[in-house]
Amino acid sequence: MKPTTAVAEVLDKARDITHPLMRKAVATLVPSIREVVSYHLGWAAADGTPVDVPGGKGIRPALAMLSAEAAWAAPEVGAPGGAAVELVHNFSLIHDDLMDGDRERRHRPTVWTVWGPSVALLAGDALSTLATEWLLSAPSPNAPAAAAALAKATAEMIAGQADDLAFERRRSVSVEECMAMSTAKTGALLGSAASIGAILAGAAPATVAALRDFGRHLGVAFQAVDDLLGIWGDPATTGKPSGNDIRQRKKSMPIVAALGAGDDEARELESILFGTPDEAAAEPAEVLALVAATDGQNNKGNGHGQRRRDRAMAGAAEVPDWSPQARRPLSADEVARATWLVEACGGREWTAARAKAHLDAALGSLERARLSAVPRRALADLAVYVVERES
Image: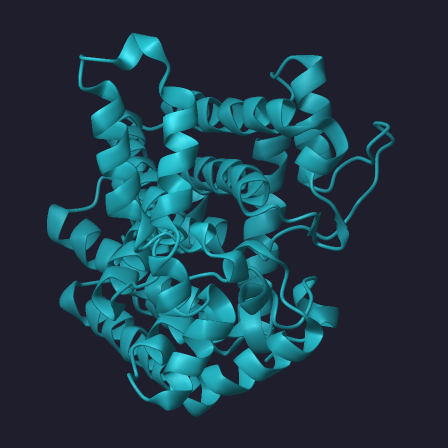
C-alpha cells in the first residue's frame, strides 16, 4: 500500500523540517565519522560525493511532530525530538546491519561492508551520543525531560536487541518471549517518537502516556509487518532477497509461531532450520572437546574450567550453532520449503492477526487523551499506513 495523499504530505513535511536539523547535527561530527554517517543517511556516496539517495520513510519524525500538534502546540516544537529519534534509529540500523551480517540496505552496500566493522560501531555510537546532545539543545524548557525519555527508550531498544541476539543461540523461543522482545526492540523507540513532541510541548502526563502507548503498540504492529516482509516481501521494494529471514534463521514472529504449532510440519521446519534434536544432543562431546582444549593449566583447581564446561553443556541442547545443519547455508529449495511450512503452520496468519490487534490497540490509545482533532486523525492514518505498507 502506498501512502494516501494526506499521509504522504505529513511524511514529506516531517522530512522537510527534520532533515535540515539532522544535517546540522551531523555536521558537528569529526570528518571521518561524518563521511560514514552521511553515506548511511543517503546524503553522500562512499567517496564523499554529494548524492540524494531515498532514505527512510520519515515515520518517526512525523510521529514526533504530530504528537506536539496533538498536544495543542506547533508541529515544529516536536521537530528536534523527531530528528533525535531518527538519529537513534539510524544508529541502531548501522549496528543491526553489522550484527545480522546484512550487506545491503536501501539498495546500497551497508556501512560495515564499505568501512569495516570497527568504523560501523563508531559511527553508530556517534549517532547515539549526537541524538542526546542535539535534543538537549532544543529550544524548549522540557528538553531535559525529552532527552531522559529518549535515553530510557534507547536502553529498552538495546535490551530488546540483546534478547534478539540471544534468541539466535536457542532452538526454542516462545511467542510470549518473541512479543516481549519486539515490544522492546521496536515498540520502545516508536513509543518515544509518538510522545516526545508532546513532552517538548509540556503536555500533561496522561497525554504523554496515551501517545507513548499508541507508539508502543504501533511499534509491535510495525515489527509484525516487518517480519512478514522479511519472508514474503517483494525484493524490489524491500531491498532484501525474498525469504531473507528464513535464510538467516531469524526468530521472527511468523517463524516462532510456526515452530510452536507442534505438528509434523512444525517439526520438519525445525529440522530444516536447526537440524534434528538428535543431532543437537550429539554435540556436547564436541563442545567439551573445544572447551577442554582451551582450559590450560591456569584453570586447574580454580573452578573456571568447570564453570565453562557447565555453561557449554547447558547451552549445547539449545544452541543451534552447534548443529551441523545450523552451520551451513540453506539451499534455495530449503528456503522455499521452509517458507511454505511457515505459512502452512499458521505463522503468516498469526503474525498478520497480531499486527491488526496492535493497530487496534494503538488507535484505542488515542481515545484516552484529549487531543487536537486534526493531528489525532493524522496519527491514526499514519498508523494504518504503517501496518498496510509493502516495504
